[in-house]
Image (cartoon, rainbow, N blue to C red):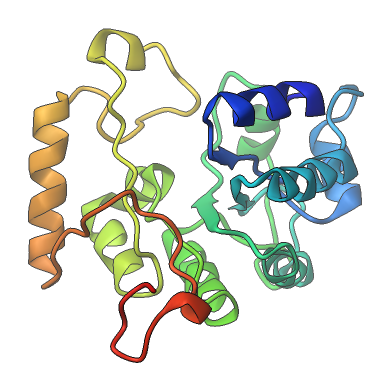
Length: 231
């Protein structure tokens, strides 16, 4: 979450994609999650996404499914916000509580009524991915690491057959990625880049797909010829 001057400088230097999750489009929930941190502002994030679009970035954003206090209505509004922003990439992953964070500690002691609040389950995450694909047919949607962490490789396979079309492998050197402890049990932390690559290729083959070729930019339908090739 950088200022406009920095984002413009990076664009001039060659950057062409940026991921900035707004996490939730519910202003009250956002404030609750970032209580006491005046640096975090939902409207500012939305404005930055719009600004980056004007600069020529491919923009990515997304939400966390199952945040404490998140309602089904707020998730529905999130999906509509994806469409409104015309996102090139939409990241949708389940909330994985970390036991050593204030939010994680609060979550572990809470009981939520799933008739009112969204659960942080693989099944719910897959539903949000599927609905997002219907509303945003052109956007890239990853089968996230967080989903693989809570649901295993099968959840990732299901994501790729329910709307997701991208896998983003972690290629950070192993000695560093074990230090990036954003939630416990993160998928692929102990594996080498070669092992991760091999597993991804197998996963894709298992569901009868083949890996795409190229940079992986969003493909807009208005730029396709009748036979499906980019003009």
